[in-house]
Length: 150
Image (cartoon, rainbow, N blue to C red):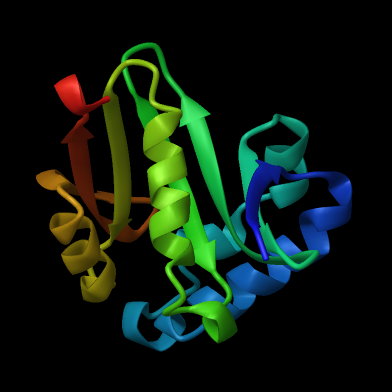
């Protein structure tokens, strides 16, 4: 059964929000508040054309939010339904995001308490550029130069 990554539609918003809740709720206690992705307006993100969903057998299992900037692509959010984790969907979404980076540079940030994510991105070739506190959240910023491999 093929896996499809396609632009999200209004019909996907409830599923996207459910995935966000399931994927990020476990971090509330560790961070001490809701992680940034739980506060986003996904209706607006979908309307702006920033969200792509990963679908298999007619069911959405994950999504990625990409924001194009003049010199880089911001991977704003990537989440996979916890029930579908371990199936390679996160890697597929990450590869899709990198394929959309028209300037050959992709950036992201994650909460410093999400150590698993930091380790995952490091394994995927992202390097830490800096840390900062924004909106009360302690973030780790990372970047990958896709260079000649893009």
